[in-house]
Image 1 (spheres, rainbow, N blue to C red):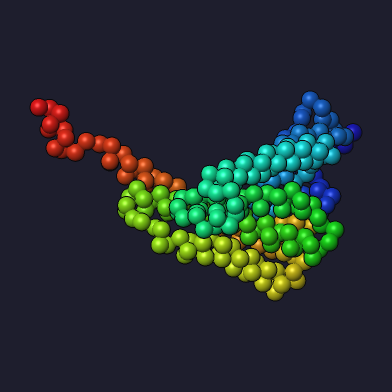
Image 2 (cartoon, rainbow, N blue to C red; image 1 turned 60 degrees about the horizontal axis):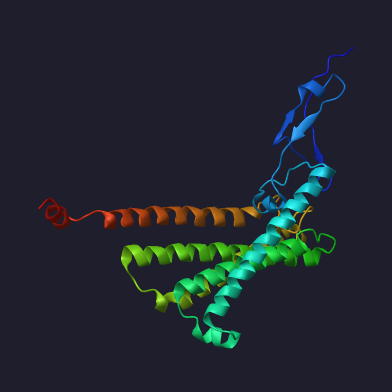
Length: 263
């Protein structure tokens, strides 16, 4: 009998790639002729941050992950709708009056976060697998990239608002128009840059991966989203640390208060 070294070799039939990530050999069920492995993976929504597009899923895993993804995103969308509806009803029964009445910065920020997240999730559920029509697939991916980036932009704006409100005690009401322009405009610019890079390399069809309607990792376009999100998350963490430090200082008694407590 020839010596056989068992190894893990997976092929993703849709993406034509190999991956061992998240898998291990089940030695009790493996022998010299067959190697049995077990794998664990994240839900389909994890494709948004997948920078190498190399995964292997069985048909059963695909079904389970599809159910988890659909149920999870559906619940998230329902919460977004409830939040938006509660916000609208708390200010006005008519959309026209709402647009005239909404002036509080924090209300605008949170409504914008909810709307952009909800829109991105709806597009994800409706079109992430629409790979049959390349033009539609590219459009879906571009819309998802734009709305998801907008959501993170508004999260950063909320962090900036918190910083100005707590640390600087600064009124940002007059700056809201600028925040709207940045939070909705910057993602559009990033999408345009991504499309331009794809068109310049291998054509617009290279904007998306073969498996899903999302940014391609083969030409590193996915990093325009991953790096963008990571940068915003780092900024928000730094802002949170600064705000918590300031609030801790505010809660500490001053020297005069400390002396009066002694008396």
